[in-house]
Image (tube, rainbow, N blue to C red; front, side, top):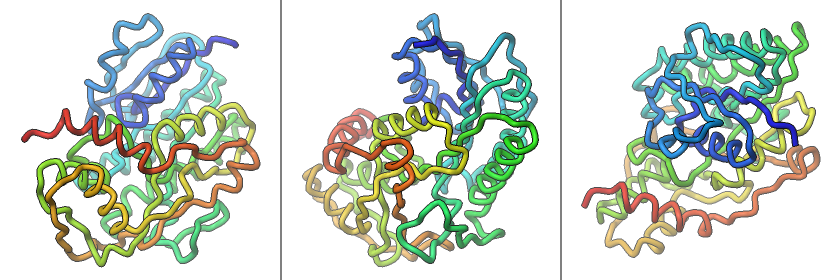
Length: 314
């Protein structure tokens, strides 16, 4: 196998750090770029002594300059949880627009392949279920979630424009709910929220009636899907996620069972524009990538709970 030089923006984040680790394990050289707004240095600390790994601390909304040849630019930089992108709305819009532009500019200058980490949030609060890549979405362009949704929709548009105009070899991964070790315990998403609350014997907070659905993909399955997407020639967006759909109540009950907590469940009003349903149609990934998630929810949640046990202060 050819040894590649791969740039990963947002490489100290949850998904980015797993991607750095995986690519290094295949003997590729990795350059991680992160400004640590939401990335965590601890995620990449074990990689710093690897001679194939280099860290650049930088905001990719600024011009990116890297010497030498580059085979791939993987653009994963962005706040990704509602708490983060509502705390950093301008930065989220800038990394989705200017950051994507700069990452594409780097790929163009180096003749590199480019992969965009997009999101299921481009579908907004969907009016169809499951969501195929052909669905154009139902997005509020000025709502509290719009800074992330629209940043990613713009990122997809400029990625396709660079492919059409500059003939850059591009990929777009629309990533659905992913969980696993290295999620930040305070990132506000349902997996760390429920696990942290359960481990502290605090009430699990459900927003709305709990009948809204999510689909949970374990990080190892997602990394496998990204690698397979890199090794195909698909230009259209590809959904990467686990199609098994659970209500939030079902997920809460699983966490209660696996942690053995004394926690109860508290209900709060549903946030504005919070999606009622979320389930990927992965037909394209199955047919074009020969990819389907293998790890069932309970199988992946157990090591995730073990990881969070070391992070939760009693």
